[in-house]
Length: 76
Image (cartoon, rainbow, N blue to C red; front, side):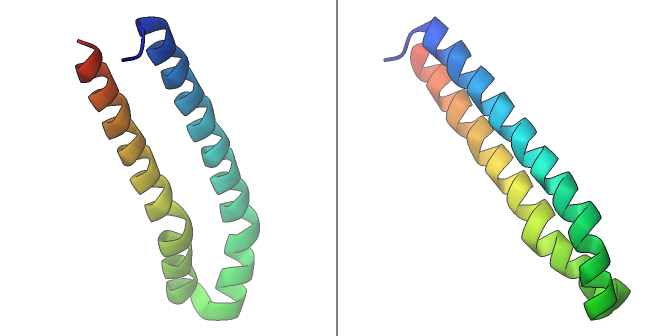
């Protein structure tokens, strides 16, 4: 069992981690987008960015929220 204080610290850590991933994702988009579009064209470059950056970021965020929800419900 985790305490409420530990849960809030974990939530804060997860929020900071997601912020860092979002910042990394923005850098990847602005720098990598030009390379992908130049090399693969508009359509395939966009698909590469979607598959390698956007979808994994959303999946990781959702999984983290599920874990935090489970921890919160176990605490209650």
